Image (tube, rainbow, N blue to C red; front, side, top):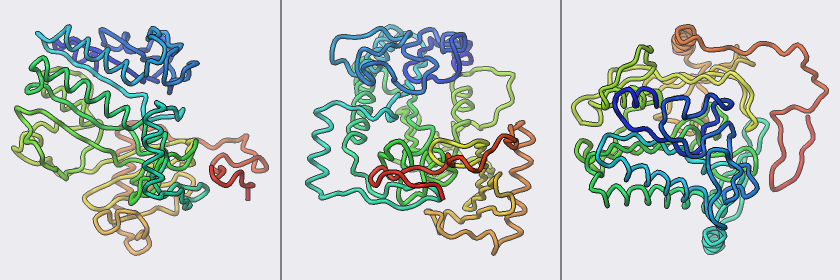
Amino acid sequence: MGEMMKAAGYATFFAGKWHLGPEGFWPENQGYDINMGGVDRGGPYGPGKYFTPYNNPRLPDGPPGEHLPDRLATETCKFIEANKSKPFFACYSFYDVHTPLNARADLTAKYEAKRQKLGLEAKWGREEFRDVRLVQEHAVYAAMVEAMDLAVGKILVKLDELDLAKNTLIIFTSDNGGLSTSEGSPTSNLPLRGGKGWLYEGGIREPLLVRWPTVVKAGQTIDTPVCSPDYFATLLDVAGGKTTTKLDGVSLRLLLEGKGDLPERSLCWHYPHYGNQGGAPGAAIRRGDWKLIQWFERPDAPELYNLREDLSEAKNLATQQPERVKTLLAELQAWQTEVGALMPVKNTAYDPSKPDGRMAANPAKGAKKKK
């Protein structure tokens, strides 16, 4: 995306989490003029975690007490101001909200007080081998969310100050659902099932906010399902860019402009490995209201849900709808072939006597023994 936008004549800037390979494959090697904090790490694992010192080779340390999301927002604002007279593309990939769970003390205290005032207590359910949080009452996580919101607000204020807001397209989204089954399980995604690392809606249904005042009507809700590959296609369209790569997504421009809907299509997800959140290798396809999950461990046990009637994916209709399962599975497998999706292979060194990595302790109850 950085290369495409740069070739289209845009100044390009990246801030935050990259996590896409070793040095030599960082943002500055992928079309971005400026890289603030994008390295091989998946989180802020320096001595100060979300506070300076960062020990990040692409982000100089700031003064004592400096908070990472605010610092990266400041750097984004500097870039915008420096390029206010020409087209620019800024990608702020937040380290928040992500482990390590670490937040400003004042914001944590604010939400701890709110938790107590509301009388909220942790409650737990079960998602296969994992305990899953059922109540949003984690004060540190809430504080991290507010810090992210404040950073977004800082950038929006800068756009207003420079009189750039009206003609600036902003996309706010995420790459996975909230962490509910691992590493402290700091949030709940109810009424959605599961969370990060799972193919249920709690893992793959994301927030998506778009602001483009001269084009997008404010205050509307568009219920057409879209997917993250569509962002590249959309920016390619908006920026007048070029690419020789076959696009997996479609431009959302006409949809955003209110000039038409997208053609009917299926959306597919591929997750061919185990995750530390307890999920298993699999894939999913959604067409209309129907969603099929294909588990590579259990090829004879697909799951089928009607999301309009059963958003929480509580009633598996696969045995009642064998023809629909057959049709959706064939389409999903054809898509996997078309995109060259990598498939898992059997681990010949698997030792069933060792602990099962899909199992984990309930954070509130201590360790559980392997069954």
